[in-house]
Length: 156
Image (cartoon, rainbow, N blue to C red):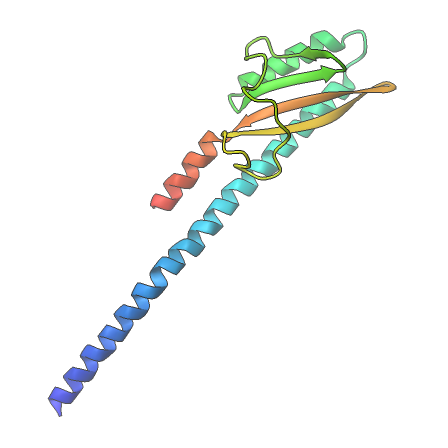
């Protein structure tokens, strides 16, 4: 009888181990996906809010003061450390921050998702009303710190 009970225990432990071996990787993948999506959504939401506030500030600048205020605003945005590219386009004329490179390495469209183009820069554009016309504000945000946080969370 004891032998039968011991055999059942061994089988039960074996079944539990097999179930754990099958479920733990699935659990890790699920939690990993949730963590990645959470960090990415937090990044994108803050980038969209910050860039919209920057565009609103540009809209509030007076016409006679616009170029000076725009240049100061672009420099201030660059100094946050989160932005790696700034540009205001007014037809063929382009205004950049004085403390940043003039153009991104490759001209491309805005990102719609975190990590969209694999270059670790999230580009976003906003139309800024300037009286009867509109200019385009384009910002590139560094995805690197968020990617590092995701990697660290996955390791934990």
